[in-house]
Structure formats: C-alpha cells, structure tokens
Image (cartoon, rainbow, N blue to C red):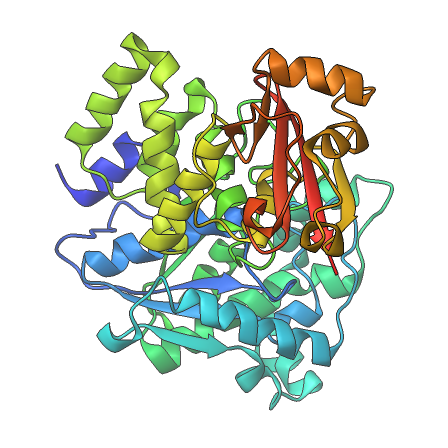
Length: 421
C-alpha cells in the first residue's frame, strides 16, 4: 500500500488536488502556513505540525511559512467575523514564539526551513502588485470560494482587506515555487480555496506543476472546535500557558468514540499497536489504556518524557498517590478547582495551627468537633496520608511542596492550603 493510500485509508488526508501526487517515488518541497495570531501555537495546530513531521520522515522537505505580512490582514477562512488587526510589534513578538515551537517538530538540520512572508511583501509596490498579480485573478472565482461565500451571506459581511487574503496566500505559493522549488502546499480542509488559488496562479504565471493537499479539520465528538477548554480558551503547546499536567489531562479524557482516530492522527504508533489498543478499548474500556497511551505519546512529543512522567504522577495523586517530588505549580494545577485557603507560614514555625484548624478553616468540617469525629473514623488525609492524631499540630515538615498542603476528607473531598509568608 502506498503512503497516499495509507493516509487516505486512515483519513489522515482530506483532499488532494491531483492523482499524480506520489509521496513514495517523487520528491516534494512542501509548505504549511502559520499566521502569528498568538505567541504560541495550540492543540488545533498540532495535527498540521505532525503532518509536516510525517512528510519529512518520507524524505520530503518542509517549509514553515510564518505570516508576518498576511498576519496583518487575517485569514477569513472559518471565521464568522473580521479579525482584530494586530500591531507590528505584537506580530514580531508572536513570530519569535511560534518559530521556536515549530523547530521542535521539523528538523532544520535535514533541510527544513522557516521563512517569513514579510521578507518579500515588504518590497512590493501596491500598484505593480495589482498589475502583475491581481490581473491573474477573476472576482467571480474568488467569490465562489467557500470561505468568501459564507461571509458574504452573513450579517458581518467581508472587507476588501480580508477578501484580498487569498491573493496574498496564492502569491506566497508562487514565490516559494519560484525561489525555493516548492511544489506542494499542505493545510487544513478550510484552506482548500486558498490552496487552489495558489496552484492556479503558478500555472498561469510560469506553467509549473504545483499541488495541494488538505488534512481534515478535527472536531470533538460533540462537534465543537477541537482543543478548546470549557471556557472557550485553547489548550496551548507552551507549558507556561497550559501545564504538561493539564495537557496530559486533555488527551486522557478523550471519548472512547474518538480515541482510536486520534491515535492515528497524533501519534506515530504502528498499525498493529493501534489495533491492539482498539481491542482493549472494546473488551476492557474501563482501563482506558488507549486514552493513557494517547496522552503519553502526545505529551512526550510536545514536551518531553520527564514532563509526561510528572504528569502521570500528578494524575495518580487524585487516586491517593504520593505527592513526593511535586512542586507548588504542579499541585496548584492539579487542585485548581478545589476550595483553597491562604495561611501564614509563621503558624507552622510556632506550631499554632493544628489539623483541626485546617479542616474547619478549609470548610471540610463545620466544627472542630466534627473534625475530631472524622479523624477517629479514619476519614482524614493530609497529603494523601491518613491522619490518626486529632491533636496534631502542623509544621513545615507537613508541607507537600514549598508552600502547599493538601487535606482530604473521605475519598474525594479535597482542599488546598497555601502557606505564604
């Protein structure tokens, strides 16, 4: 089975511009575009990055195009209203952040490149660009693009600025074709209109053969945009914005109905391994082995093995595992949704704050009397260790990390105490 056939079989490719595309016997220099709308990429970009990795492993040369120029316009594809325009300073800052992340996925030492389209657009004269490039486009064809039709039929409409985006992206492909021998563009399925605009421009301008390939737009099983939190924020690839623990949790919580598909999309596991995980899912779904494997593989890819091992350890904490080796940041991420209290660290030094005080202050018990009874019944845990002494006074040795203690009543009722100076 050819690579194209394999990709199509597993729905890793959505659309091809030509049956001539042969990933096994022909050589391609391909490009993927990234507009700098933020200073970090997010989970929604991840499949495109992994596709670049797959193609590079097959021997093709990737170009990551950063939209320093097009980012000032904003791609209307998939958007119901006009983007907020960014300043040059913000775009420059964002470019540095995403460029650093892209280098983790494609190998510059093996011929991959990262380019910025501002490098060629900044030298263009508006009138000469319209004369030389604009005349190659027909308005009727541009208006027939799906991304344009949707916006034109909406109350928001579309400005000429966004309408011109497909011309700019098409020129990117032409420039890369003429200057970097690029002959394949890869993007999400919502980019099909922009991609075919580029292949048409290359054909009209220099007669070269150029191709397009799209990957499926991934949505959750509920049909929502993939990689969003419950509050609408993204799961980011930057560990400062989304911790490895939160990132791991995102993947381990995938639905049974979608996890096998995601194992094919987001990992490099062989077919036989994924088929075995599918059998486990069908026979012993409660073990969630497929989800755990997915979370391990993707978190290791985006971060590293140390980060994923720490995320697994942090996950085990919620099931009574040891808190040893976890820092303040990790514990705050694990227990961000539980009640928390601020306490003075000096109370630990003079041992004026006891376990009964902690239970009542944290709201796990209505009174110290109730707290005593709960301890006698064996239902109180400090840092996941059972407490049997109701007279226990807390000291710095009871901290789970630099500043934090975790107290639990029963199996699942947690509270966090943050001891600050």
